[in-house]
Amino acid sequence: MSRRRVSLRQELPLLVWLVFVWGALWQNFTPGNLLFGAVLAVLVARMFYLPPVELSGRFSILQAIPFALQFLVKVAAASFQVFYLAVARGPKVTNAVVAVPLRSHSDLMVTATGHVISLIPGSLVVEVDRSTSTLYIHALNVRNPDDVVKFRRSVREAEAGLIRIMGTEEELAALKQEVDA
Image (tube, rainbow, N blue to C red):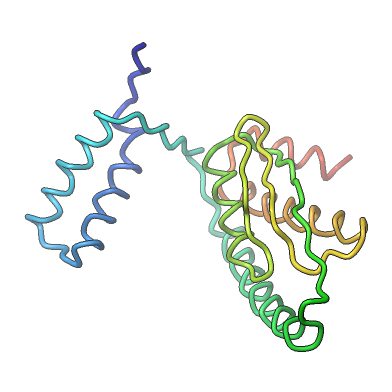
């Protein structure tokens, strides 16, 4: 079975990331070390199957700034909520694993959404179903079906924010159509 040939343009973000990780691991960003890391990155990318990082070609800084600020507010608020629940309610807190089907089937968008959600205290992605783009997330303080609906909505809002920032034109159009409906 031969794999589809990936262009250097498609593979470049992965290669740059691998070189950066190499430099960070060695804590050495000298040209020689980075060149050696680049050689290793190309060897790894050619010898092992890694799905290509498919970028949409768009990035909206005007959407990214408010998203980042909202994210920081959510992290701070969730930190205080987790602190309160740990001190006041302790082991009586009810948790759930919630399945959240996402709009996007892009590996990059699913991964970004999962990371954003996992960075907010009180939630953690425990499973990803790539075939259906479904995140299974352990959520803190889920007491009833209304809390599940509210949590799913918050995850899909995070995904919508990421689509507005760096989603494809098709994802953006589908999101606008969903909002208008």
